[in-house]
Amino acid sequence: MKDVIIVGGGLAGLISSILLARAGLEVAVFEKKTYPFHRVCGEYVSNEVLPFLKKHQLFPEAENIPQINRFKLTSVKGKSSELALNMGAFGISRYLFDYFLFEKAKEAGVVFNLNTTVSNIEFDNEQFQVSTRKGENYSSRVLIGAFGKRSLLDRTLNRSFFYKPSPYIGVKYHVKTDAPNNEVALHNFKNGYCGINKIEEDKYNICYLSHRNNLQENEASIDVMEREVLYKNPYLKSIFQNSDFLFKRPITINEISFERKTPVHQHILMTGDAAGMITPLCGNGMAIAIHTAKLCAEAIIQHRQPFNRKAMERQYTAHWNQQFAMRLWSGRNIQQLFGSEWLSEFAVGLANNVPPVAHFLVQRTHGQVF
Ligand SMILES: Cc1cc2nc3c(=O)[nH]c(=O)nc-3n(C[C@H](O)[C@H](O)[C@H](O)COP(=O)(O)OP(=O)(O)OC[C@H]3O[C@@H](n4cnc5c(N)ncnc54)[C@H](O)[C@@H]3O)c2cc1C
Image 1 (cartoon, helix red, strand yellow):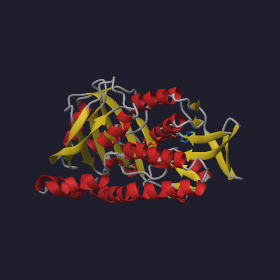
Image 2 (image 1 turned 30 degrees about the horizontal axis):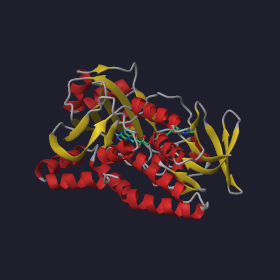
Image 3 (image 1 turned 180 degrees about the vertical axis):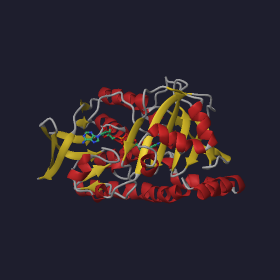
Image 4 (image 1 turned 60 degrees about the vertical axis):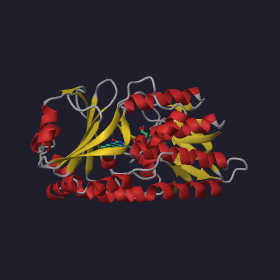
């Protein structure tokens, strides 16, 4: 029996596995894919995580990781506004970042079960029983759910948000283009928004969130949707027409839900998006995933001897609510300013004419350095 099983090897799963293994616990991670792989993500990471990553040698110093300190916002019709980012961010692909952390986790002694989908989790007699699609069974004393925004496991675990349909799709590309090094841009289009920022190796990430209707109304074709909807914003048209696309086809996901979830469910400690997902326009889902992993590992380490599950769950829930409940709520509300023609004009006007309000909104969705 393992001390801790972690289901899902994204940022939340990898970071918690490293902290726990370094503290001497026996940890196994189950991940349905194999590293390295691409994910739909804007790949803009808020600097609030930088001191933590550096302190634990979890930042890939050897790579040429661009720093971002400017924010550009454009409206559906192409009006623009710019803002300095106080805390700033860095741009890194998940392909590189997750693989780097995977190597660090192996060094720390974490056991990986890759290409392995967990199909069921049961809690009985103070132990978790984990079953995989391959028909194998494993047990652990503690279980971390790090399986992201939406997994079939959410249905198995009867989490209520799973049954609420979500209309959003996400699309991502890596490109070579001529854009500022230190800027993250957020371009609005009808019922969606698209981020662009630099990542390693002089590449740029283009990633957008769109209402599913945009696709359905455009022959169910991403290509047609981009030409008919995204290109209405002149900034987007120019970026799409003047970039070299590095993937054969875009990476896509659907059913992206921002519904409320709970950080502990059936004694499973949920981390990252599995505990709650912030809207991507805030650009700090990854920072939250890393921070939740830290808080979760701390609660486990603190209450492992003597083992006290109740205290562990109570501490993690309290810290999660304190740090993230308000940020996720703000993200859900601020998202309503985007994707509508007149509201996006209003948001750009606000940023141009009353910069302190724009700074305030950015701060509401970002955390403090930890
Ligand atoms: C369009 C879009 C743009 C975004 N842009 C940004 C951005 O610019 N900056 C930012 O900070 N955040 C952004 N985010 C959010 C960010 O991607 C997430 O918050 C972050 O990836 C959460 O990390 P995680 O570890 O919780 O989940 P994930 O990284 O999703 O990892 C979950 C892992 O669990 C695995 N898994 C799932 N089910 C099972 C199972 N049953 N068995 C085994 N393994 C399983 C998956 O394969 C996956 O590897 C964006 C999100 C979207 C949708």
